[in-house]
Image 1 (tube, each protein chain N blue to C red):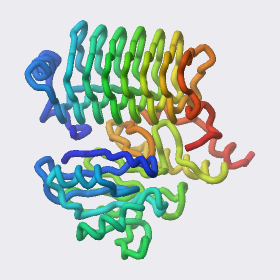
Image 2 (cartoon, helix red, strand yellow):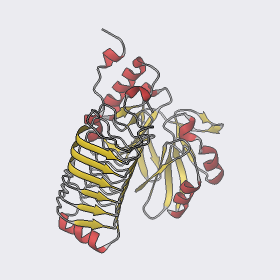
Image 3 (cartoon, each protein chain N blue to C red):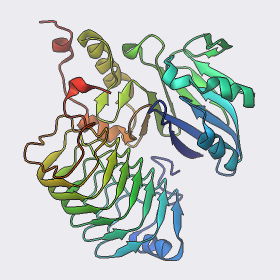
Image 4 (cartoon, each protein chain N blue to C red):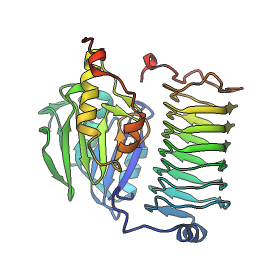
Length: 178
Length: 194
C-alpha cells in the first residue's frame, strides 16, 4: 500500500504509468497522484493500493480491470468508460464525472461522495455498500442496477432515473441510518 | 507496510490487516469475524497476528477475537481491561503504541461512547464506528451526535489531508474528502441549545 504523504519512493509520471500497465498485469502500491492520461485503452489490468488522486483520465476506456483500495478522489473522469470492471474499496469522491459511463461493473463499498455528475450512467451494474452522499446529479441514470445498501444521503435524486433497478435496500434519508 | 481490508458478510463490518510487505508480525484491527477468507489472507501473506486493536466494545467489532486467540498468541489493545473474558491492554487517549515496528497513536472518541477509540499511524486512521465516509457514527440522540461531531472535528479532521480514513463500516476515505463531504450541522442546534 502506498504510504500517504510520502510521494518520493514510487512516484511515476503518466508515461511511466502507461509503460507499467503495458508490461505488467498487476500493479501494486504505486503512488501517482496528479497524473494526466487521456484517450487510451486500459484492458485486463489489476491495480491494488494505488493512489491516483487529483488525476485527469479524460476519454480513457477502462475495460476488464480490477481496482482495489485505489484512490481516484478529486479527479477529472470526463468521458471515461468503465466496462466490466470491478472496483472494491475505492475512493472516487469529489471527482468530476461528466459524460462518464459504468457498464456491467461491480462497484463494492466505494466512496463516491461529493461527486459532480453531469450525464453519468450506470448500466447493468452492482453498486453494493457504496456511498454517493452529497452528490450533485444532473442527467444521471442507473439502468438495470442493484444499489443494495448504497447511500444517497443529502443528494438530490429527483431527476435521477433508476429504471429497472433494485433500490429496495438503498438509503436515501438520514433516519434510515446504518 | 501493506494494508488489507476484509469485509465480513456476517456483521457487514470491515476488518483491517496491516503488516510488512514480505510477511511477519501483523496488526489486526476490529476482527468483527475471523472467517476462512480472513484466515487465508493472514496465512497466504505470511503473517502472524501479533497485535489486535479494538476501536469499540461492540460485538460487531470483536466477535472474531475468541478464534484469533486460539490460533495466535497476540496482545489485544482496547479501551477496557477485559473484553470477552480476555485480559486486554487498556489504552489511554494520546498513548503511543509501539507495535509490529510501527508507532500508532490512540485517539479517544468519547462522543461515540466511553470505550470508543481511533488509531492513527503511518498515514492511516482506523476510526471504527465513530466516522464513516460522509457520515458520523450512529448515536442515540442529538446531544450525543453534537458531542461526536465536535470530537470528529477536533480530533480527526485536524490530521493531514492525505490521511487515509479506514472506518469500521463503509468505504474508505481521506481526511480531505471528509472535510468537504461530512454534513455541516450546528452542534449547538443539535444539542437543543439556543
